[in-house]
Length: 215
Image (cartoon, rainbow, N blue to C red; front, side, top):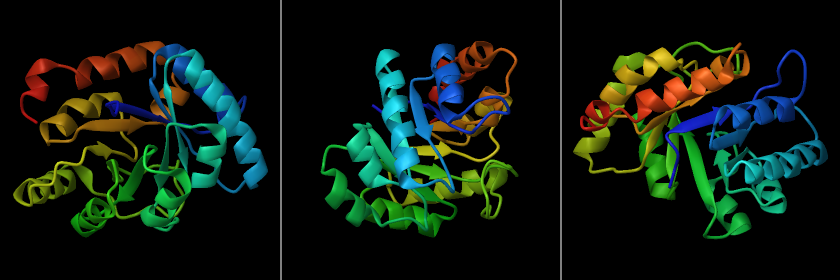
């Protein structure tokens, strides 16, 4: 089961990715993506091993961004691949058939590609401008999401779509109304004075019955 709230790690001002992940898990996050850029593979592997231990302690699932080999070595639940990363086919050869594979998309054509590749979920975005990611793809906004979901429905595509890129908790209702399966949140949780309040509020909005009935 793919969680509706994805936390994507970023390094806080005081601490490391592990600090941020530990805080997110304590706040109640159940799906964590370790996203470490511009660091050597051995360091990312160390992060992944420790992050997986933390996730196991909290009954959460770890997804490793970009690196199938590291995801496999660390015992992670899955791997997430960007459009410029290794192909899903290559990654599947490395991690096997059981590991979850997610893929990034920015257009309906990307969605078609990801569905054809056999991803388990799609991270679609960015919703708005975000400093979390370098080389940001064109911003979709709410109307962009609506257009993609409409095209997916017309093509009978049922892969879960997670809205990513600058998403805030107060955006959740409108994004779920647009037909998304869930959202990924990073900075709003990492920088929160009360991360648990943010996570609780996010899950409440994601699991509101009248919203889900519209999906």
